[in-house]
Amino acid sequence: MADGTKILVESVETQGSVALPAGRKGRWLRSLTRDKKALTSAVVLLGLTIAAIFAPYLSPYDPNAQNFQMLQAPSAQHLLGTDSLGRDLFSRILYGARVSLIVGISTVAIALIVGVLLGLLAGYYGGWLDMLIMRYIDLQWAFPNFIIAVYLVAIFGTGLVNVIVAVSLAFFDDFARLTRSVVLSIREEDYISAAQAIGTPDRRILWKHILPNAVAPIIVQATVSVSYAILAEAGLSFLGLGVKASTPSWGSILSDARSFIYSAWWLGVFPGLAIMVTVLSINFLGDGLRDILDVREYQEEN
Figure 1 (cartoon, helix red, strand yellow):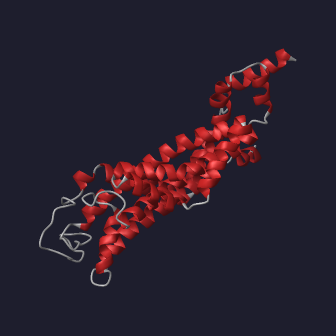
Figure 2 (cartoon, one colour):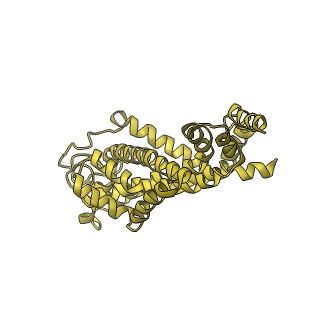
């Protein structure tokens, strides 16, 4: 019996626990190609990322340069018009994409690391550790994420780094709950019991067998959370609690547009469209990834 158990575990380890069937990668590519919304969203996000990276070379003006052409409507000289200080709106939106992407990716990366680690520990070990972690998560879930972010920014102060820390701490509970629920299911599998039976260290079981098998829903959650983080940063900047006033941000541009909503429509429309298109693209891509990474769909095909 021990030999059979050992063979089972060695077989699982040889396959890496998540060894993909030969046709899985091809199925993913075909699924992405068939999903027009996800494919279009991926192209839009790729273009936005490239534009944000090369903003200094693509923007026609310094985003903070002021001139006497204040509240100028969109024209050949200023594609999206100018604001109340004569600053080029297209350049400011282009630089604002940098802030949104940096905050979105950084906060989700931090929240993912912290949340997944807590979820792994709570789901695998259970007992008092699970109760301690999950009671805190339940407490945090009692408050909206944005309210928590506002509270943390009020403590840490404004600025890009503080916004990233505040939003990531407000969002990690989603990853912790998701990871714990997946781990609770995976730890009941036969190969986990076999690994435990032959004395495989818990650390190896967690990182070699459990985490790789839980990665699909985590990836989907991470993708969707980027859009939430972008909206949170825009909301904080709109309230004056985000990045510094000298840093172009979609939220701060919208905040400045409030006083000119009737006389200068372009000040609110274009940054609002930038936020809408970015968030919708991320959500559509997340939906596509959810379908592509659905293991049950692959099993039904075979």
